[in-house]
Image 1 (cartoon, rainbow, N blue to C red):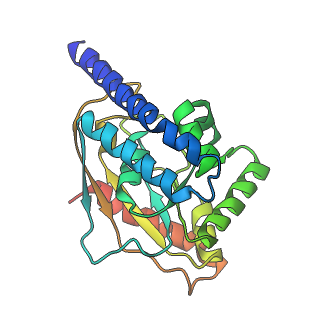
Image 2 (image 1 turned 120 degrees about the vertical axis):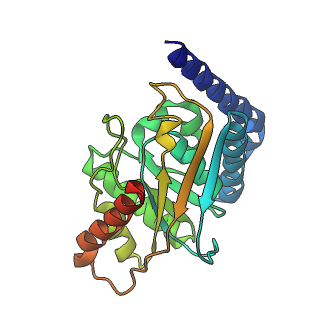
Length: 244
């Protein structure tokens, strides 16, 4: 009982810091939002700062494991597993380039995430084929502009606790092949232990390791290979999440 109360208090602390830093930066963000296309990089930069400051003040620590020579100069479709709302903050801190998140349309209900999904991110109603089509067309536009797109290939956070890796959707892999964009797999290991889903079990401070795997080129692949690519990337994630 005491442990649950402490976790709920900690979640409240985290929410406080997110709101605090969003309000702190909001005057600048509101000005930049008048022309989000022109000011895309600045909006992304301030989101990164909000994520970095709010997680640090809440005691969340991320270790980014990149065991090879990697720079953020390319354009990628970044695929990450999804078990926590903290995934967005972790990836915003990790990615040292302009990125758009593709996420569920319900995020428009939250005043903070709504701001970013109205300016630089891509909302999608997965129940609507029209919405999905428009979202992927916008993703293509972002890629053509030299921006990377973050997609959670599981589609959503499942209700299973502890979470297990779900089947991947085909969309990100078709998008990568159709646009000759490499897949960048990012494995988020154990962040759900600190804050699962949207925080129904509270949260606690701690460390999380995030593995950035080598980019997977798609230039030599035809659209028929999307299922094979999907299964290959899923197995990579499964291997890392199973551990030694």
